[in-house]
Amino acid sequence: MARNWKYALVPGILLMVVRPVPALADSDDPSYSFLSGVQAQLITPGQSPPGANDWSCRPTAEHPNPVVLLHGVSNDTITWQTLAPALSADGYCVFSTTFGTGLLGSTIGAMGPVEDSAGQIGAFIHRVLGATGAERVDLVGHSMGGAVPFYYLEHLGGAPTIDHYLALAAPLHGSTISGLTELLPMVATGPGAAAIGQCGPCQLTPDSPALRQLNPDPAVAPAISFTTIVTRYDEIATPYTTGLLDGPNVHNIVVQDLCPTDATDHNELPADPIVVREIRNTLDPTHAQAPTCTVVLPFLGPP
Image 1 (spheres, rainbow, N blue to C red):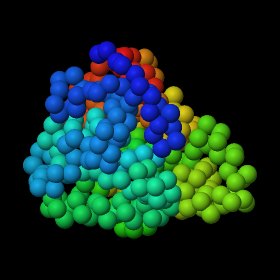
Image 2: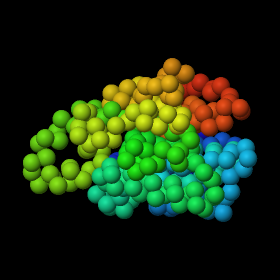
Image 3: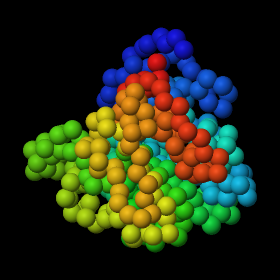
Image 4: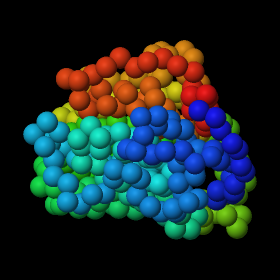
């Protein structure tokens, strides 16, 4: 697929934006690229991703659990342009929301205090259950969206509402953000101190009090099936092993163990074709298919 590049500023980040690409639901040639989400945000800011948030959707016997998608430091428009329509096409009721806004405005979420974000996630899950009549949801969270729900499980009584819990590149054991967290003490006592204390990602540094309270231990919810998916080329959730869990109800996946030519980074991960296939296999093991190994580039996806 030929690409024409432009530059665009997306909340403080200079990014290349690919030319218009067809949505997965409308094409046999989907865009497995993070940049398709950036493009969607620029064209239709804040709009639900394709296939998500049809509140008239009712789960089927084949797929009885609605799927709730939770973004990281981003929003649902940017993060789920590939996965949401893929799961919808598979017959799932798919729902997404943008949570934890405020610190960086209404566009970028997952920045609020962990406990506040967890409450918003819990309220959204209960709204989905009420609308669909389902008993439990399957949860897919990227980055902070894969970590914060542990607070909902352990402190807000959320464990009975979740069946499968898939965490993509989540800072489950804290993140150094490639060393940037070493700068936090410099601002924690200055004008930025108040903001740091209210910043969810800033709370989840290794060995922090907030991380100990989060307690990402699968043993707290033995009835939930946990799956983690990480990339060795992660530059945000670092070290990448922070996204792995341990326990009899856990399945850990390192993308490069499945496909050595996949160089996906943190942002590309939710749109990565190997990851999308593994999510579909986890949610529906009866129809699982081996992923097709291909070259995947950071941010851009397959060339």
